[in-house]
Length: 532
Image (cartoon, rainbow, N blue to C red):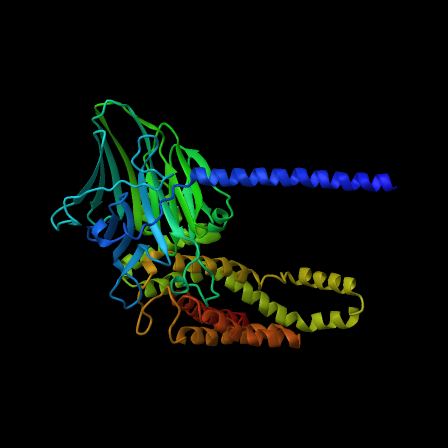
């Protein structure tokens, strides 16, 4: 026995050692892959000042570019305000002490001027430090240049167009040396994972949240979200693809690098930097530039609101970054219908009211079936009570007798629940549409409702919604004989009112109108049933 015990202890220790070795090996491989993928350039405070920056501006965006590397370290959307009633434009990209969100790009490889291993960036030069698109011009080209000692001229050009949020980033490499060059372009987005409290719009709000994180599109996958949690846990992407893009998403806004589609393969990667910064990017295939020749490499950067029709023109599947959750197949057509109504009416609130009438008209047959079923169940209540009295001790027999009764009277006991099941997906899809469509951000309705995508500041609409729900529940609870269920039904309007206090006012408006129409339909249906 002693020999057997020693053998098992030895075997256990040996297997544990092998598992530990494998874990160490896997951990090393993960760290190696992450380091291999990572293109990290430390932010040097001395290089991150106004003297080393230029400003590029068209009529919708304002960019601040650091001349060390030519990265976009700040981007403001001039047509979108930071907050409701604020005069400040929304700052989408920024570089601050507590938060970093940048769009970086460069040339890496043996002959690239950007050296990620030594954190070296080329210092570009421009003819001035402020560039603005003139009113009568359609395009603004801003070239910045860097000349290497061995007669290689690198020119990085930012191209902005009037009214457009996509920025073309173009590299022109003029090789005047006697050597052949080998390099590749990269474009990456990096962002602080944990938001500071003052920047977290969801802190203290238990309503459903939109997705914040990275995403990508490839030859094999039209659209995939990739959480910051995956990146921080060293679950890094390494995807080879001919086409696609990489992006970072947040509520209403998207930043995305769209590389040129190539016969060779681009590489999509993610990396975890400095323990709190996630990055997603791409690397182009290796490019050979013979001596005394030049080559051009291009990429696009979308940096702005998630406007579906415009994003679809910039890159295939980029419009899918509008996050409608798992009910996107309902939210998308609802938004298209809502947009058509808005183009006719000119007010998103009245468009929501009109779409509510349309949805209630479509679901009217189900609503009618619900109240017909409820009325029949009310008439059958004495017979149901009699069955319960006679077979109360025999649950199986009681269930059989009740099913026979329903079959004889041609009643579906679940008929009253069907409209609720139908309405819930519509309700949720409208919710995702309201909090995911940038067109509804800061959209006013009437009087005190200045933003349909945000909660009612005075909670008037949720209270009205609770009152309308009370009238509906008062009629519905007449079919319930159980006292406990009746009490629960009476408390439902109060519970829903509390939940709706934090919901978007546009959604509460939809529910109020839906309840009012339901009350009217209820009265008409029940009146017709009495007269039959």
